[in-house]
Image (tube, rainbow, N blue to C red; front, side):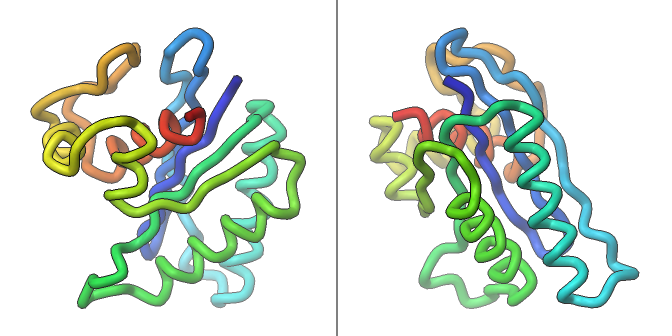
Length: 152
């Protein structure tokens, strides 16, 4: 089973493709949102791109790491992207998807919030997952955790 994990930011979205049977990270990329486009066109670009990614990688399940509910600096652009990705999942042929924050992602993975934080800070890796990219940013590691969590 292949999964997609997404971590959105205001001007880009990091996505990870994970193969659950091989326990292998297959791809890590960023989807850069063209800033020259107006907001509706940016969201249209994001939607079409995610649907293309789902088809290209034959994704079965997916997940999105969303902003924490108590975050004081929530960026509207990030929230827009997260909403477009959710709608794209609902409109696609994937079997299931989830939307998660730190606690729900940790619960899916069977780890504590402290372990989640340690993995995101590059202090540890999730056991039984091959292909962790060395020294990657927090958004990449969160997208990996979401992709693995989507399979559970």
